[in-house]
Amino acid sequence: MKTDNRRFVSLLSCLLVLIFCLTLLPSCIGSSLTGAEVEDEIFRLINEARQEVGLSTLLRDSNLDTLAEQYSASELSDDVMQTTELRYLLRNSWWVVYSRGSPRLTEDTAREQVDYCLENEKLREAILRSETRATGIGIAVVDKTVYYTQVFDVLNAASGSGEPIRLYENSQAIDPSWQRLKSFLLTDDTDELPYIADSFVCADFAAMLHNRAEKAGIKAAYVSVDFVDGPAHALNAFNTTDRGLIYIDCTGPGFLETTIRDSSSINGDYDKVAYIKVNEEYGLLPLDKATSLDYGFYEQWIQLWDDYEIKVELYNSGSLSYSELVNLRNEIEKLKMILGDYHWEPLGIVTSVHLHW
Image (spheres, rainbow, N blue to C red):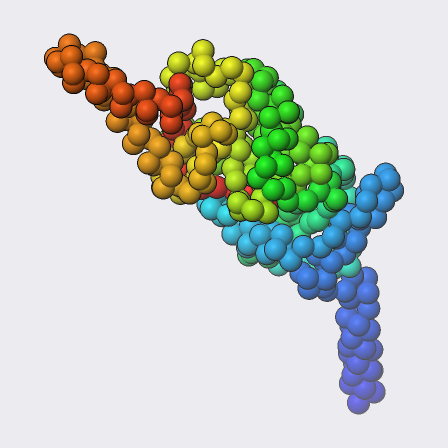
């Protein structure tokens, strides 16, 4: 009996030790946290890192949170990136695979992940972008992998030289009237700069005009347009107080030289009103000819040009009588007064448009 009692006491002691160890285990390895709690802590730590180098703290944007969560939950899918606003925004994304057991988020997780980002040159650069104002964070646990995404309200675009596009934002800038916008464009010389492949391209033109407009107190958007065929294109948009949203393409000589008629008549003015409609061609008109901003107006304008060219061809055919030539010449002159000496050919069929204010 004494031996049995000793065994019982020994087993009981072992059990109590085991229970005690299990009680201490969570404190040894860290308390479990939810994804939302880790996201909040990452946000706090990143703002702390920005403050340490003299940068402003970021705001938390629920829309950016949604994008980040969607991207993480998709396991950083290219399809999600290409079909959402995410493709136009700067982001950090990374993942951690747990080879032993299921992933577990603890009170140390946020610090570990932020330290990893700050040690990685590319991730650190995004976190410390000076022009960033807001961010969103999303975490998703999928099987044995934890996916992390941080999205910033900064345009993800490169200049012709490969450097990141940086946009200047003026908190005091306001929406202009159409007349004020035209006056600004006519005095600004961004459009006079030459387009140089691999050096100064449409993205550079759009960024320069955006920043100059903001510094002049005019609220501007950087716009990215995708086409069915060919590369994307960059331009600007302004929400005018009296004419609504207006797209302006200031890309200078060199980009569209082969797609205009009678280039000698341009006189250095490459500011153009862009007519943009998804599933339709990207149209352009000189500022002084864009008396209406409706896409239907652009279609009518192109039809007038077609009519003009048909009449010119007929006039030069040598098949008309003198009286017919006189009448046709009068019609041609009237059309030329309306149309001017040149117009811009369309760039392609638009598939998507993104405005970054």
